[in-house]
Image (cartoon, rainbow, N blue to C red; front, side):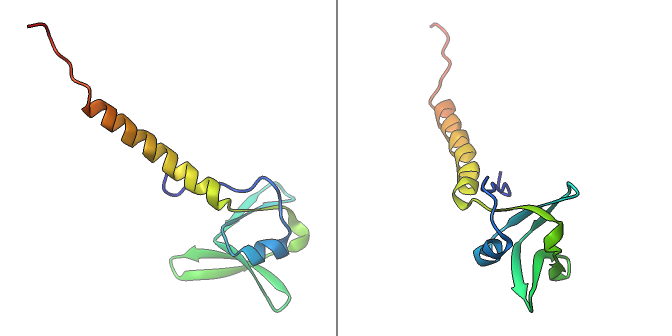
Length: 104
């Protein structure tokens, strides 16, 4: 899963999320989830940054509407990507060493 992202279970503050400069998932009080490339802070305003067809776009965030913020777990995301690939490689190697023979 090349694009799988694992997020830390422990929520962080919006200030911490902005410092991390990594993929961020925000749960809003209305129950919807917003995902951003990263969070930034400019002129006393927090923004969620998304990649669009026109490049990076800053989306103003309403801090009072946020229920929970989780940042990307870099180690977990790497493991989710590497472990299935390693398992597939092991199966291919095991399959290539397996030969079916009939009496003879």
